[in-house]
Length: 402
Ligand SMILES: *Cc1c(COP(=O)(O)O)cnc(C)c1O
Image (cartoon, rainbow, N blue to C red; front, side, top):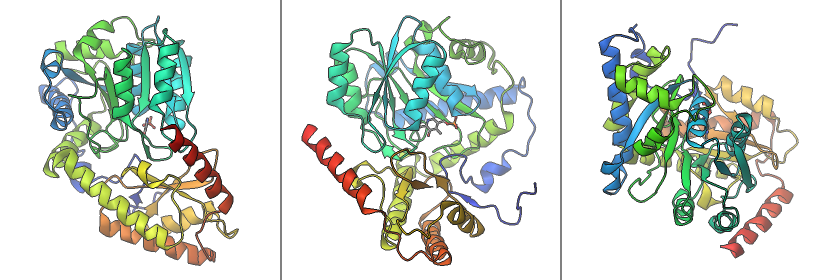
């Protein structure tokens, strides 16, 4: 298989995503994992990750008395999610997963896989978890010790109401663990106001590095308590932390090139204006994309208020001439890799707004979509009426509940 090297396409996917040339170039070095230079780089990325969290946090004495600590972990993002869940949901604890998509389901599956007591509250595919339902559940089941929230559920692109859910968890005196994989670095998290034990993200999402590791930002007191809790030798976050503090090294072979790229990506994140800078570019990407797609007749799966600047799901056009496989290839021929949907209720495809892309590129994306529809002889991108009606009904129901 020969990868087309003439044009590197834009990855409009929520990771891996399009990275800058400088980030790619940073990988043209071989470094020893035991070497002092690499130890210093590891230290630096851990410090910079905490700076990103504090940059959007109001001051709170608890942030100094019991600080957040960054612990990187080898593997894709899911490895870090499992490291966090396995270490912080104790063997005698019980987790409640708030799910509205594939990544919530995955957390639940992971917990079951390593024999943690777990329950799922399922909110479907396109509505946010309801804080009132959460509150009732926590009042009723006193065995629940931990609540798991997905910050941006990347399977639909929904931005979940993290602050509202966190308020309930705090009020009911439970611990909160956050999968902020596709949000951290671009969606502000106020750690001075939102109380949580840990959050997890990875190198190849909003920081715009390349794949190879994830990281957990955890309260020091929570890390200290997590000794001997992990279900896994390699994913034992506690041991990774203790070893890293003692030796400066990763416990097993680190993805050295990925780490070099990540440091460069962190520098660019700062130069762009940190979380706010990134949020502003991604938001413009999203607006340009949605405006253009709506002109062509497309509809988003989510209603306006839940759309994230991370990734947007569009409903398939109702026109029978629309074929996703063909559409995908036509887009690829024009230099854009898009993403199929992951939903059960409706056929969708997704276009990411994150990575090294800007408004100009988003305009070209819309042009490429228009071209592709023409080539397929699709008359209108309007989705089927029945789904839209069904969705409207459900959303009305949700509003009554608010
Ligand atoms: C990307 C992502 C993950 C991790 O996926 P990997 O394929 O293992 O990197 C987990 N949760 C969310 C919300 C994500 O967007």
